[in-house]
Length: 145
Image (cartoon, rainbow, N blue to C red; front, side, top):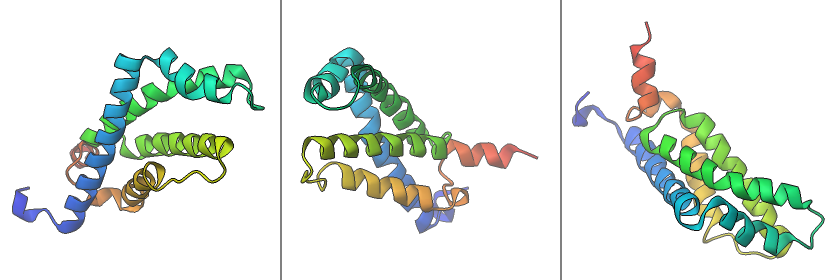
């Protein structure tokens, strides 16, 4: 396949997948290696939501797991490997983030954070996987007899 054989939909999927992958990979990288998973849980989960109905164990668990999900799923999106499961994992993160923001502030404005990521995610998720020709998933599927 040469560059002139790649159609517009393939480029659109690749660009959206790469941008979304970079957003989550870089956020996950920072949360895992700079802030630290425990620091992430403390800063964004246990301290802000300690006085809610959510059990503390759930805040610690989710708060420490999310950085790894973002890091790994973001990396998978970047190369286009296990794209659908990675998208679903990140969709779960976006649902958790939405719930948390709404719990803290029912009028939270989502247009700068959640909506752009969700739009990219839904675009890639709804496109036919067979059109994501610039991905490891596509390359692996073509190798099968």
